[in-house]
Length: 321
Image (cartoon, rainbow, N blue to C red; front, side, top):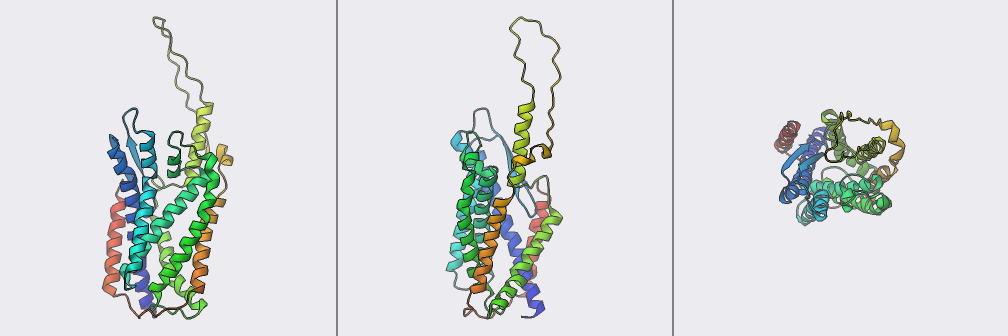
């Protein structure tokens, strides 16, 4: 495969990754969080999206709403929708007769949605933060269940294993896969380069005020807890008819991150989850035997069209809230 064809393939893959990840994000935030919140009576909803990263939804409810079940639905709706839509896309991809761009587009959306949901669940349980706190909607404290993050290790490994085999069917006929070395080189020159470019773009366009991580959210939780612990008690209300003295100024307690950093677990869990996903992916690709895929090149117009479309979507999200 010539360098020109590899560049076209990488460009198409990068555009597909961008479009698939943005669709998964909109489904998560809008379909999984914002719409359930609106249906359950939210009076104000604001959706914040990052160009290439994550996002979050803010909402305001009348007093007494939503119920505990409603809180659970709103918190876990995004993960649930990503799992459902991702599994459906992965299933339909496998049912396609050809292994062209529609196949790899469905596969990227399916694998990305399912892997993102599983890794989010695992990291959320490990740090006790993020959407998984919806499993305890009354207290939002899942500290007693943090050990459940290990349950997601074999699931992450299975995702890496099967996604490698299915992606290899797309590469057959486009790059040489006759030996383990050729297979790894083909994987790194295609999906590896595209993923690396995605990461560079994400760093360049990152919105720190919008994006976060389960580790950062856990740190913010601990800062809030410590601030509440150090805050002076609220003085009791004076009895009716008693003279009112001057109201003392409110005391603002400031907690620095380093003061509570030791309460946040080290990132062993996320490293293990992401590591086993990549390890099984590479191991399966190393063992994959070449099939009978027919040679098929990416038309330049298709690659450029996908690139323009993905650039437009990213530009729109740059100006989103």
